[in-house]
Length: 539
Image 1 (cartoon, rainbow, N blue to C red):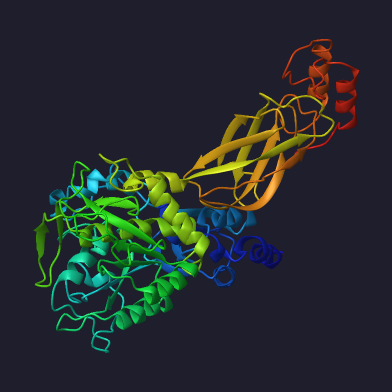
Image 2 (tube, rainbow, N blue to C red; image 1 turned 180 degrees about the horizontal axis):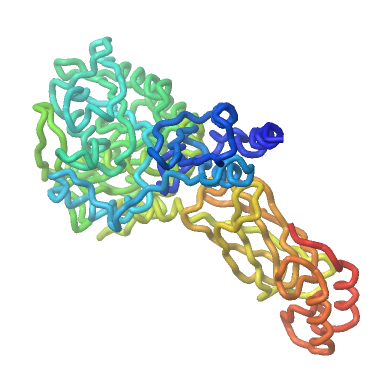
C-alpha cells in the first residue's frame, strides 16, 4: 500500500521538480525539512528519499527532522504539499529564509557606496538578490583572481590577449569593473554589488602591454556565449564602426545574452561603438542627482544612465578605491549587474536562455528607468527597485464567458485564484471587474513559477486552468467558459443557490448575482438554469 502511495509521489510530485524556478528568495533553493511518520521503516524512508532525489544535509538531533536538498529549481512549497498528502511524512516545510526588514549587507565599505541606495538596491534586496546559477561575463583587461572580494564569485575565464587561461589583470580596469558588477556581498569585507548572488566570468581581451584587437574581442564574446553567460559587459569601445563585431553581438543576442556597453566618455552625442549598435544597452554616466556626468557621451541613441559619479570598487592591489570621474566604464557594469539580477526572474533556470528572455530583461531595465534632468538619454536612470518590483508583478488577463449569458459583462466581478500544481490550496487571490465583453486583468506579486489557476465570475463555479507559468511579462489569453448557478460562491450549485434565486425572483437591475442569464431580471430562466446545473461542483 505504501509503495503504491510512493509511486503516486513519483508521478504527481516529482514531476520533473527541476522544471520550476524558485525565485521568491523565501527559502533556500531546493531545501526542505522533513519528518517521517513513526510507522515508516528506515528502508521505506530511504526508498522515498531516492524517489524524490533528496540528499540528507543534516538531522536535527532528537527531533527526527531531516534537512533535505533536492534540485535548486524545484517548486519546494508544492513538493512539501505533495509529501504531506502522501501520508508518509508528518512534517514537510521549505527551509524558509529569515530576514530583517531592509536587508543591508555587512560589507564595511557599503556606507561609502551611495550609488546603491540611490538606485533602490536595499528595497530590491528585500525581495530578491539574484541567483548564483546566472553569469555576467566581463570582457576587459582581466581580473585580480585572488582578490578577497571577488575570488568566491569568479568562474574560470580565459585570456584572449595572450592566448592562455590566466585572465589576470596587469592594469586594474577590469578588476574595478568586475567589482562593480559582482563583488562578493555580505561577506563582512570590502564593498557590495547590485546582484549579490550572481557569478562573474572574467574574459581578458587585452594583452599585458595594453593592446586590444577586434579579433580578440570577437573571440571573447563567442567564448562568453559558449560558457553560458547571460549578460556581457563591455566597458570599452571605439569611435569607429565595427560591422564584424555588430554581427558577433547580434548572434549572442539571438541566443539570449543581454549585451551592455559603455556609451563613451566624449562629452558629446557622437556614436561610440559597440554601444551605438541597437543590440546593446548603451549606458551613460550620471551623478547622484541624476544629472549627466561631465565626461559622459549622451543622446537619444543612449538607452539609460547609471551613477558613476561616486563609485567604490576593487583594485588590482587587492584593496579598494573611490572614483569620482564619472566614467561610463563604471556605469555600464551597474546596468550589467541589474540585468544579472533580473534574468533569473524571467527564466526557468540557467539553461533557459533565449532572445525572448533577454528582451524581457532589457524591457524591464528600460521601462522602469527614472527620468533624468534634460532627458539626455532615451529612457532615464536605472532603478533596481522598480525593475525588480515590475519583474515580480505578473499580470494575468483573458476573457470569461458564462454559459447562457446574454447581457453585458461590464462590472461583473471576476476572481482568480493561484494554487500549487494539482492542489486545491489557494495561495493568493485577485479580483477585478470585467468589461462589457468579459475581458479581465489581474496581477499577482511575488509568485513566480508554475501554478494552477482557478477562475470564476460572479455567480459561477470555479474553472481550473492547469499548469501555467507565472512570470514577467505575464499571461495573456487565459480564457474560460464558466458554469452559472453558484449564487453564494461556495463552489457548488445546491439548495442554497436555488433559494437565493427564489428570494430574488422578480428583481431587476444590472449585475444581480441571481440574474444568471444577464437579461436584467431574475425570472424563470434563471431558476431553470440553477435546476439544470444542480449538483455540479467547481474544479
